[in-house]
Image (cartoon, rainbow, N blue to C red; front, side, top):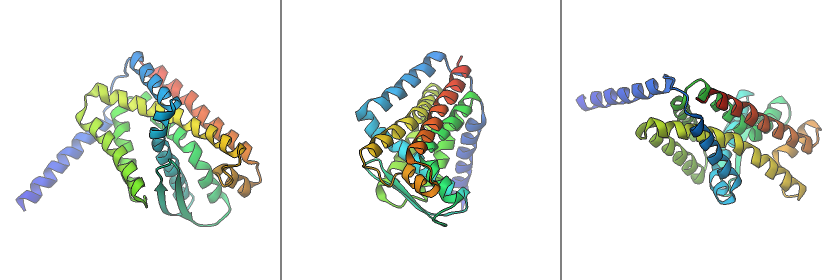
Length: 248
């Protein structure tokens, strides 16, 4: 019983430390660090070998957005699968047509950009460490919906990296990571939209989200791609503006 009591006491201390760090605003970093993380994230997205590896993070955000939209519109979320080729699938049950299905199909490609925009707002308000712990929490919630081993591995590794940074590394490293992740989400949201249209033009994506939306709404798939690009590009402009304006 004493051991159990000690365990809960230690767990409470850990959670208290995390909560305090998460809700305590920190001073804005130097513009040098902000621009350096911006350049790093952009290079990772543009350089094909690093993009192939890190694109899994964008896929996690993409499928999580599908799942959240499904739940938000009253659909039953049955699971999410993430694959080694950076593709993924989210399965939900409900009406085959209608508002809920449209929102669910639409959310995927814009999801990473919107998440990046939210992250940029938190950075503007000074919650860099809070952002990292919030992402860890969201990954933990996502984990229960994953239905394949590679997906479990992807989410666990992503979460473990952020826990390591948030708990053991210096405040400077935590700040740099928070800004790098945010810039990566913003930039990384745009490239899949461009890749989608290239695949559509070559006839390799007949059942893409854009084409599913075209079937659901009657609006051509190319226009949906344009909307995806408008939202993700707008997130880069707005989120990037918030980040740069807050830099010291």
